[in-house]
Image 1 (tube, one colour):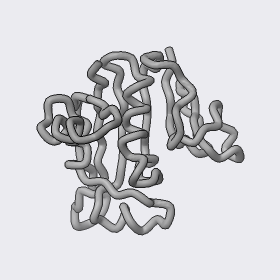
Image 2: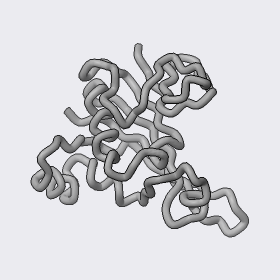
Image 3: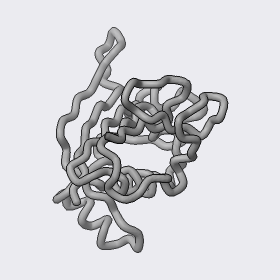
Length: 156
């Protein structure tokens, strides 16, 4: 069973291959996720992308989502955690260079009219996922739901 932890940093999670572009973190796979993933199509059982998507360049969002979709087996899940814009957690870290709202994922959701329109107007493949579950998390006294947790399944 192949499971990937993208942007793992120094953490190693049992059962997951750590994937990171920083050699100092000693990942199992040294790789920049803004480039084609070094895995064959439909060979990965699960992907974990916690606090990494906000670190990719805006123009690479669809490419990275496509690469996740490409390597996942049909129905394979990707677990995403990401700080939501416009909350401070999404912009205060100087390494956060792309900003996401829940609606950003509409462009990758199977059967969503925004995804379908996006697919028709682009020359590159647009991935297709179904929502398995989602939640928002707050961790401040004002109960601002600043963190999105989303699990998507690859539709192939």
